[in-house]
Length: 249
Length: 348
Image (cartoon, rainbow over all chains, first blue to last red; front, side):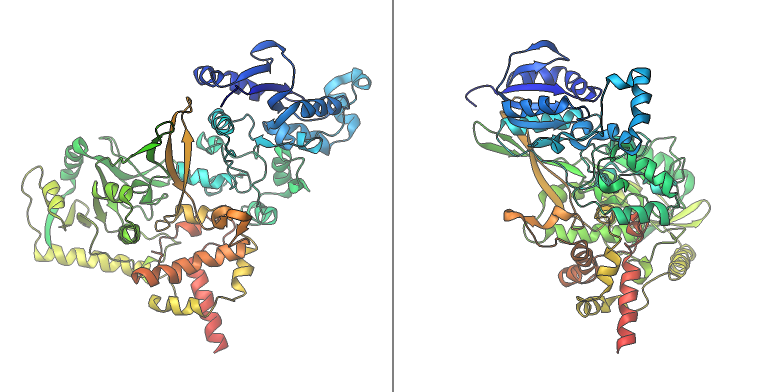
């Protein structure tokens, strides 16, 4: 590669936990820095050397009127725009509010100052501008991020898992949560996390979004009719991360 | 076949001795009651009476992720990577030995899979007659109730404190006698082992396919267009659980990852399966099996016909793992074969 690509990080509504994951790469990050120039990355250094950028990583969901022109401007200045993390790629937990009345969530967040802070239903970045690639997860998987960056640097299309978490659970040798009488969204959620939550004893929350061929009818059948969970329990879990998808309908 | 009688108290010191040379894995029950092959420790309590190990044993020969090559991008060179730790699997049920025997044949067909072969050759298999049969198992009806090849030793418990141990290979004999001579089994002990095997087979016979299993390939051929595929696949999550847990499914994907310096990297393989939507996706975005029902049918044709056409056995040993793993309850070779058989008899 003749010239180091110019990389920038931007954030919208989110906790910046994905950028934190990248900052936490530590030594691997230093190695990566040998291949790239960082134009903007506010968790690591101050300032922005300005566009155009070769790759912009955008974290967070779009949920305020002023977010839209900003993300469009970033899009205009970027050759590739990559949605970073669940809020950006699928709307994430911010979309829980999409199922509440606007006055309720605005007051819940901003209290008596609510009228000064207009926000509306949260959306993933792709609902506003064209997104070239997505790094999934809440937070993103550091190892996967490094691999995706390496693949982009080598001019390859990054490999993104297109099957459900169940595959990675079987690879890990985990006991299925359904065998333990628990609910789990691994049956419809895109893999790539190495089934980390299940491996650590929890269940899948769906943070990587729906797998491309997720069969939601079958998932409901598994969760309600077979495993015996109520529609409310199923809906609560589906709305946690998948609020922007049809999964919650 | 030579057989020895081994007392229970003889086994822990034997395992300890073997563990000096081999990675020894034994069936161990976890706190939730699930049994898995786990590394042997002196404190390990062997689950002698387990009905089925939660995870199949294929991971010992075909690890879920395995490096195949190291490559150098600048020099355009590559070196094969072959890892094969010496391992000893203790307490493998006959249907699982059968599954491994199938893999042995299938992985050797065409271009032999050298990584598999190496791991297999570095493995000592110690079989064990089951004491219990899983409710979901149907191994006795698919010809997987007994094996006579593939293992090095075969343990059958003939009393609370003793085992009848058949040795099949010189390696097995050497390992069994590693702590000194053992008494050869007597005729009554051999009879006791035979009775034990017959008793467990009788238990297993309670659940099974309702016709001679050798008829399955012909049965399948008659049912390519059965409505069953669509009806069942309606509930298919395309999650791949059935193929991942299957002891005889061996498909994998091959990928590559560069090192951080982007100068070299590794090629590795990872479990893949025909139930996953992108398995049959090829260049030009064409998918040979785009619908869940295509993939579902394909899996049962693999199990009931295609593997039979290659090696003369069903590609299913009746362990019941897929039946358990399928959260929507559609993965069940026994139910599928029986349903088709019934449909046939109603039509004719």
